Length: 219
Length: 166
Image (cartoon, rainbow over all chains, first blue to last red; front, side, top):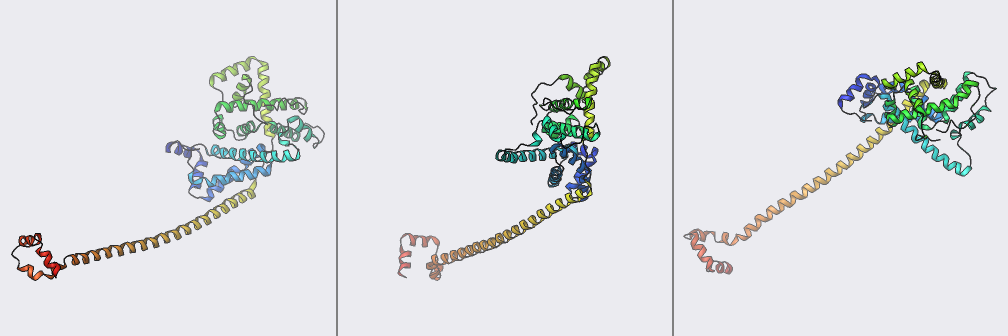
């Protein structure tokens, strides 16, 4: 993401303290970089963990994102809020990583005949995971589990848009910038994601019935 | 699983989502709020949408902690050290190349200088050789009345003949 000129660069630096920190990082200020790491590490891990369903993988990706930020410091020009720039990098890093891993899994699947559990429809996921859970209790833990499963059933782009909207409170415009989409596409993506979530979660929320249909996960 | 974005989406859902996200235009906002006041089913639809949105708050949040910060900084420092080492190596290579260029330049300059001096000296000697007959007879030539007389002698071949005889 590049600047539209010195005017916009200055305006971002004026309103966004993280842009100012990044400008210090550009001047090789390691303390400023550490501050950015501290400020954003949890936010990145949280979004990425829900995106890739693995804490360890999310941590690796987060460190890769910070490394890329550091490598790009000398050419950094503020052209957006720092968080938008950072999550754009995160989105690219995560998408590439998911794609590469999928390719590797495709090879493994074709040789072993096994399937990728993260791509299972929700109904199968629910059955698989319910065996690991105690008796049906409408407690927060179980609810969190069901919500996680519902998230897993969404496509990668819907999930990313949803996470940025929910956890990062990003505007549609910022999500569009981060994911390189139009605002209209983001609006549509988020609507589909939320309708899908509602379809999946409603039976459980209304009657404690774990989702058994497969209609909701077809986006 | 892929995002089937081309599938038809209920415009009411789209409008409700935009309303909940505060991303609706003022006209749309008025329209939604008017309908919410009048239509119980519409209100219920919004409530359900909101309910599932709030359920996302239950998703576990993680705290990476200081250890993660340290390991990230260590990674960055390690990468910086590798980059610094590579830069030093590159500098050494460039310096080595610069020395060779300087040496080659000095040799070339010396060769050029030698060639120029040699050529200049040779040219002076050549002029002396060409002027030798005149030099040998310089005393006699001093006694000639004019340059025209010498020119006539040369035209008639007397000057050359005389020179060749010598």
